[in-house]
Structure formats: C-alpha cells, structure tokens
Length: 358
Ligand SMILES: CCCCCCC/C=C/C(=O)SCCNC(=O)CCNC(=O)[C@H](O)C(C)(C)COP(=O)(O)OP(=O)(O)OC[C@H]1O[C@@H](n2cnc3c(N)ncnc32)[C@H](O)[C@@H]1OP(=O)(O)O
Image (cartoon, rainbow, N blue to C red; front, side):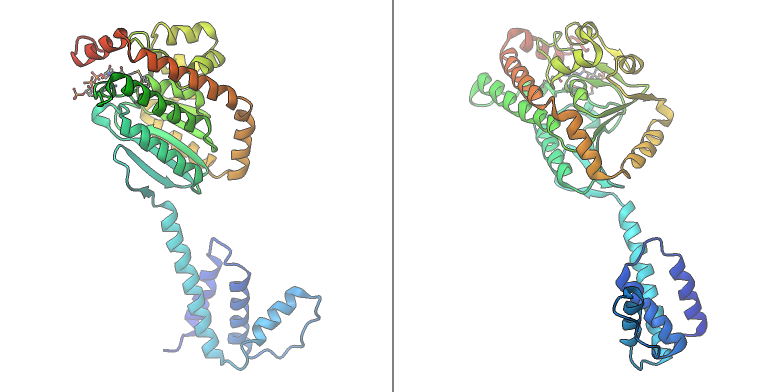
C-alpha cells in the first residue's frame, strides 16, 4: 500500500516530538530518505573531503541511487514509526520497577536509577532474622554493581525495623551456644562491613519506629530521612548486650559523648525531632506527606552524575574506613561474649515470656 502525502507530513511532525536524539546514523538515514522522497536521486556535486558533515549527508543520499520517491516516502514513514515505538517502549521500561526475585524477607526494586531495599516482615515489625541479614548483604552487593545511582533502605508497614530478631538467640545449633555466638559474630561483622564499604550514596527512609541495629547502622548512611512518627531506640543494656554497627564510634562523633551515652548506655529513646537535633537524622517530614516528599527529593538526587557521587562519597568516607573496620571487629567480639552471658539470656527469655516489652 502506498503512503499518502498526509502520512509523510504526519511522520515529519512525529519526528519533531522525539524526546531522545536518535543518533547520527539514524539521522543520516532520515535525511537521505527525506531528500529522495522530496527531490528524487541526488544530483548535487560531491562536497570536498574536509567538509565532513556535508559529505556524510551527500554519501547517505547518494547511496539511495535511483530509489523512487514513493519508496523513499514509505521507508521514511517506516523509520520514523520504528523510532517512535522504540522510544515509547523504553520509556515504559524506565518507569516500571525492575523487581529482583529470590528474596524472601526483602522487596528489592530498581527504578528511576534508585535501588530500593525494603525490609519486608511487617507482621514482625521487620525484625531481622539470620536469613534477612544474609539477604541484605546480597542486596547490597547487587546494588553496588547495578546501574542505580543511589540505594535506599526502608521498611514495609508501620515500623522501619524492630532490630535483631530475638529468635536468632533461641535457635541453638548442634554445636551449642558458643557456636551460635561465634556464627552470629561472624555474620554481624560481615553484615556491618557491607555498610562500611558500600560504594554509592546510601539513604535511610525511616518510615516508622526503629530499634537496635537498625538505629546503630544509621551512622553509616549518607542521609537519613525520617517521618515524624519515627522513634530511635537502642536498648542494649536492657538486653544485656552492647552497641554494634560502629555506633560506639559514630554516635559520639555525630552527637557528642554525653548524648551518645544517654542512648547507648541508658537506653534513651529519641523522638524524630530529637534525633534531628542531635544530627542522627538529616530531615524530618510530616507523616502525612513523608513518602511523597522524600521520593520526589530522591528522584532528583538520582539524576545527578553517578560516578561523581560515588567518588565524592569515597572521599568523604574513605579516611575513616580503616578505623570503622577495626571498631566493627571489636564490637562483634564484645557481643560474642555478651550473647553467652546470663544478662543477655534473661532479657531474651523475658521478651518471649512477654514479661517486658521495650
Ligand atoms: C545472628 C546475628 C545477630 C546479630 C545481632 C546484632 C545485635 C543487635 C541488637 C539489636 O537489634 S537489639 C534490639 C532487639 N529488638 C528488640 O529488643 C525489640 C523487641 N520487640 C519489642 O519490644 C516490640 O515487639 C516492639 C518492637 C516495641 C513492638 O511492640 P508492639 O506491641 O507494637 O508489637 P508486638 O506485638 O510486640 O510485635 C508484633 C510481632 O512482632 C514480633 N517482634 C517484634 N520485634 C521483634 C524482635 N526484635 N524479635 C522477634 N520478634 C519480634 C513480636 O514478637 C510479635 O510477634 P507475634 O507475637 O505477633 O508472633
């Protein structure tokens, strides 16, 4: 079927609406077909060797030889239509979350250059099981390598995270309680190491209360946004434990020694406003508009140049890395001992006996 002059004009208009540059090769094809369709075979003199642009255009037009005006019009319309449809399908792909499979305790998606790792055990307030520690490690490794610009950790449901799942201390392996403590310390050190070494900007979107390790890790994030419903609680001495996530070093650095002591020694629970005042949180948003405001902000950040952001992060964090690894190692060693203590065992039993809730 012959294309009409109207189809040809429509294709010309559609071409102007393309958002992305189709590239020089396609542009030359379009130029040549347009000239052939409107003027017929190329009869103008060949431009000089040094007139690169004119010569490339002339070559493209001449290469069509004696193709008829009708056939050139048809090819022009077909080419424009294929460019328009490939652009719209790539736009659909860009906005569709690329959901990563194989996670049971997380929902991991990449969209708009942001990898979002969502803790996904809302019925247990996103308490972190052994499996979840391992899945977060895997998700961070994948996010470090994927084409996202920033990585976000958030929680599903009303809590950001209720910290370590206390059941991790009740599943005693065949090697006994010492083996459980040793394995736990190895896993914890590796887990925290992935935060220390994470190469891209890492952002916490704290959608509700945060407890224990989900709070201590915040010092290793680059930005922390919180809803005004969030609270920050590190009840280590109540649990017969000691701080982790490099908080014994980062919290005094961030908020000063005495404020850090109130949290890490004396279990003081901070409101979002207090956490902001002490520098642990970057900004607090009203709960009603939290998700909307934060994601608008993050999408804008994710449009910044990827390598520049990663490099700047390395400069900011690089000087402290060695220190942080040493702190992490020491904290895990102390915890390994603590987990074998009566103080810790009694606190865990007490939680499951529902004698006390934090
Ligand atoms: C293997 C590596 C180990 C590394 C360890 C690293 C060191 C980490 C330290 C820490 O993170 S210390 C902090 C530990 N967290 C806690 O002590 C919090 C305990 N939970 C609570 O106090 C309360 O649940 C809550 C968070 C204040 C919420 O109370 P609320 O009354 O609103 O809800 P609940 O009915 O209590 O919870 C619903 C449901 O979820 C279970 N759950 C909540 N948090 C945990 C948890 N941390 N561990 C295990 N289970 C948790 C809770 O038992 C409920 O379950 P069901 O009764 O519905 O079955």
